[in-house]
Image 1 (tube, rainbow, N blue to C red):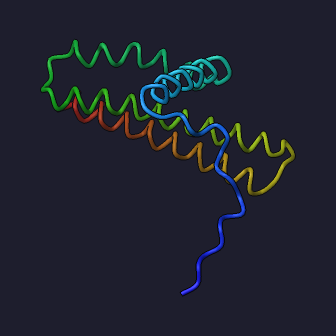
Image 2: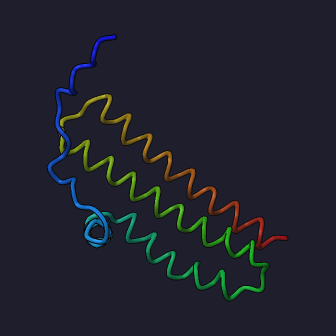
Length: 131
């Protein structure tokens, strides 16, 4: 049995913190991500404002606890997918801002994921409010 060669790439130099320090750093990076998305992404800004209306509304409406969970979850899902879509778009643009079929495909697929999350939000809220 032969030993496998070591990988030709090294770990990221940004890795290495452990324990509580890693958690504190990760929280800071997440806050930086929220700030960047809010500052640079119009769609995310709109979704933040929408969530500030819909999430309290879910608690105001007289519905079952499970319905509230689904309503809030569907709002948060839209924001999660939007953040991931924005990250993909940023990476694609970092690689090259030239038009390329693969770049378009990546961005279109991310956009489709956001659309599905928005449809999911509409279906969840619609079914709960109409029943």
